[in-house]
Length: 405
Image (cartoon, rainbow, N blue to C red):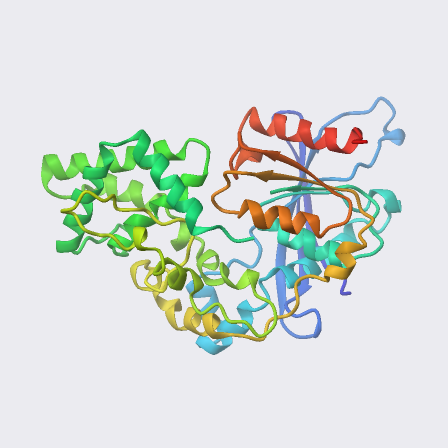
């Protein structure tokens, strides 16, 4: 296992009695060949600022680590690595198997002087759990408890959330049809240079799985429909607001590797969401003259996105190559997970649109000693919601502190 190189560290006090430290690390792109290309990682820690009476007795605490700002991927930065083939080879190392090795390399630097019992404690939502599961499968010496705060989503759950949307905002059924009819006849350009296609419009459904975001979609539909009624076109403020609701121009890596993070062995994604969606007729209806609702799509990636998003257009060939790659490393050692000795506490949301509830529970059952808090009162983003996050952690710590006879 490689060890990261600490490039820089700066610490500052910020309002709220907090002490924040910002770190930059260097790690190998490919840990199997650490002398080749490298990546630059960013990490930030935050702790409560306390000025001890006796500075010599100040306690060094384990800090929570938040990563981001790390070797940003855009069409421009990828071009530095060569053509589509070289870019696809580079992006192979942005999956859980490589990221876990990055995190372990950083951990070895940060915890070199820590006692063993303080070296690992994790709280991770969403796809980051794939990395935690992969790390549990790879490591046999971890002693501290892990908290997993949430497997790909199901089309059925997306359809269910569409029904919930139209049940709440029945008037939007005709508004959506009016907007689709307009997009069928007009070539609408967005402020960044992308195209507002029908497929891109339907991607607003990505918001259906968050607390309160059915209302966000309604507000957008109301504004777009109002523009058509009043002016016969979408105004610049409306288009700017719409564009800001879909993150793929600013987060192209999201689109490029979204399907690849689930792959193992000789399997290719081959645009799996696009293939599966075509098997569900409720998502194929685009008629503006019948009584059937036009459904929004969810957190799925489609080939058409690489023609309608300005930042994704230069990456279309790279995305196509990635969709056909079929030689992926194994992500999990199920035998190691079955013999796990690390206390693990997880939450599973019955109505999660982004993570299949059944697959989440099936995965949890493969991890020996994993205890789950199961609820139908929270969605995928509960950890970031005021009030709900407190309840969530209360339930998780009860799993840790209580027993079930």
